[in-house]
Length: 159
Length: 362
Image (cartoon, rainbow over all chains, first blue to last red; front, side):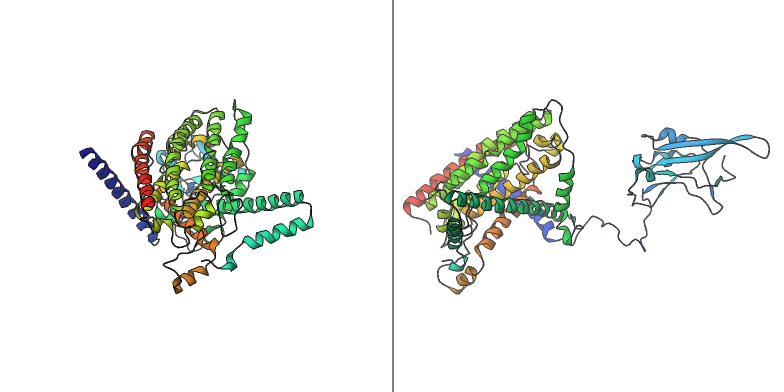
């Protein structure tokens, strides 16, 4: 007899706990005001992206068209899926010393997973994440970008 | 009683007479088949597409999200865009798959649900086929779908598919019992297996009210068991996306996958409409007592609206289940059926038989 009572008790407590769960989700369903996700930003004109957006990898240039990249190739080595290609060239300084400078910092956006290893490991902080997030294009070749601007040079104090 | 303006019997009879006067009887029957088939095909596609959208929205609201809201107003054309995408996708051939069975499986699943929809009464006289063993037919046909699922799992040559299919087999065979027995309680109440007869027996009150506690128990058991039978969460062990990728349809792509997807939602619709027909009065309006003003107002709402509304309520409850409860383990699933639902059902049907014998129901 006790086992029958326990059996019925078990069923009733099961129904009660299930109802508790359904009351919680039902409560969420009828309160659509509390949306926790963020909407896609459509106000592109006055849109102000917040700090720490991992949009795409960029190389910041200052007003004299100067960047901080030495062309050391550490980002290329650290990139897990080969999205970065460093092409360097040799240049003579006025003192007659031969130095390596960056020719093309090739960035394949289509392969990038935005892991951030390149930004994190860059010894001279030449790379950063930009706020651009709409990266869809109709031609795959447009996803291959050259990060250093044409005619740019390295800042004086970077070694 | 319902109004005559919503009686479709004369309309269908007139169409039949018109066709028969215009062509030979054989061609007339063929044309009728064609018309009914086309209507159901259209209905099937529209309801399937809408249910996918509704599920995504309900799920989103339950999880405090917005869901698809960009294609069309409130995102109602989202699933049409998805369908176009699925139609254009490549059908990936599977290495060492059993070609014939692999290609047939989605059609078996979709045909099973298509056959079940034929027996459902949408309004008075709006009924593709009115068997005198309607309940029996629906139970028999709706369990055919598992054959397609087993074939899909077996022929895919993939371990995920096979495990999913085997689970689905165990699940559907067990829960079939509860679905059948809970429907039988109402068959005992109404004294007929004909779906139109069951609807007609609810003209003075739905069975869930007339049959009081036993009918409510049968309704709850039917809801649980039919959720399991359609392989929906929390009983979606056959798909179990977190452990089996996608279960029995892991290897399917493009439109073949869409068939499985559509069949899943249509099965939900069919199960909900059976629940509405058997327990909630089908297309019968809500009536209290007889002959008062409230009943007359209710009579003016078309029966099709009543039917769809009740079905929508049941569908919403099933979606609510899915997005609330975590998935059961296979042993918990079988325990629930064999130790709880089936004994409850058997006792319930005995009680119902006793009630009907003594006439203790409204």
